[in-house]
Amino acid sequence: MVQLLGFGSNGSGQLGIGHQDDVSSPTTARLELKHHQSIKKIVAGGKHTLVLSDDGVLLRAGSQTPGCRFVNFGNINNEPIQKHDCSTLTSENGTGLLRYIDCAATWEGSVGVLEDGTVESSGVGRKGELGLGIGVTTANDAKVIPSFPPDGTIVVDISASMSHVVAILSNGHVYGWGAGRKGQLGVPGIFWKPRRITEVQFRATRAVCGKDFTFIVGDPQHGEHMILGSDKWFVITNKPSVLPPWKDIGASWGSIYVLLETGEVLSWGRNDHKQLCPPGFPPVAKVAVGSEHAICLTESGKVIAWGWGEHGNCGPIPTDFGHDSPGFEIKYAGKVMLLGAGCATSWMVVSNLVP
Amino acid sequence: MSVYDEIEIEDMTFDSTLQIYHYPCPCGDRFEIGIDDLRDGEEIAVCPSCSLTIRVIFELV
Image (cartoon, rainbow over all chains, first blue to last red; front, side, top):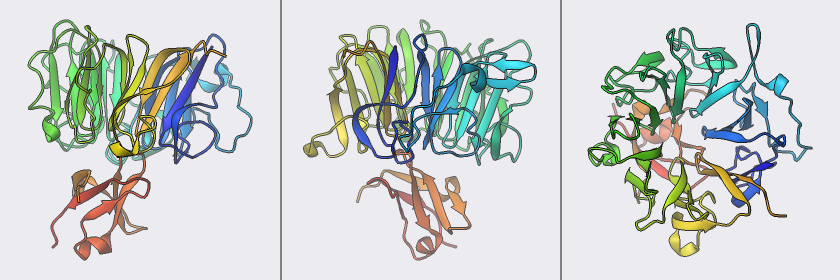
């Protein structure tokens, strides 16, 4: 049995913990998972959170902007926890019910990848974030992005930041849509529907989005990578020429993080709120990156968060440190299965809670 | 006073009802500044939920 714990910014109920107050210690989300069910991805917009279960249910907490047809959790009035039934929650797409296999969130939008390969979008996006075509800024119900992905391909990875979305296809091609005035989608401009980012010269395997940039990587063993967009905070200037073999990648609004096979977290970019991985850090097993903070699980089982923690998203910070955490341990019981981080929000998926 | 970021006004969103420009804040809320305040020479947009502020980059015409 796993439990979702959240802490941090919660003014819109985005932690799903039954109220709208910030908390600085991991607090159980009002979300009932079945005994066999786990969580495979947590993503967040400004005021909403998407939680994807391993059996294809997309759950949502936080502000009810249009397009919230995923199952909601964490009702803010402390009503009894809703039981959810998978059959009513997956997307109905033509002939039958489909499960979600991946998801991403922009500031006010949600993107879901379905098991039949289609990609649907809902919410609000004033700069093309929905990917539904020129001038489409609102989708009250999830709508399928037309003609995407191209025939013969599937989406194998999807990522978003505040205002743009980037998808990696099974053939290694990269597509993106949304705000791109800084060149984060290749040529500068707003892209209302998916654009192939032809500027990428290698077979891509993953991408992560910062606020005004995109970090695209190739084979984890080959070290290929590319950063498109703004060089603010020297995120491009300070990049390594080749990446050592890596396990995972992440991006905050202004920094890039690469978890290497050795357990070292390579990070560069913005550091004015202690966003980068602290020096001399112990080996890391998992890392999740939010807007201006990061949370990690060390190989020895400690959870440590660092960066801008004004809302309690890095745990309690002693007054002497102001709002910026140099990396304090987050106390918990059980085994961490997954970490998540959003806009001043942090999540831990923990199993086998000790009574 | 140190600001969190400097944002060009063309990247902000104008709300014609409230007569404000706004832009996302990393806390999940948003920075806001009234168009009248901008006309008066104010350039700092504030977030009602946290201590961060941004400087709006614009030219008075």
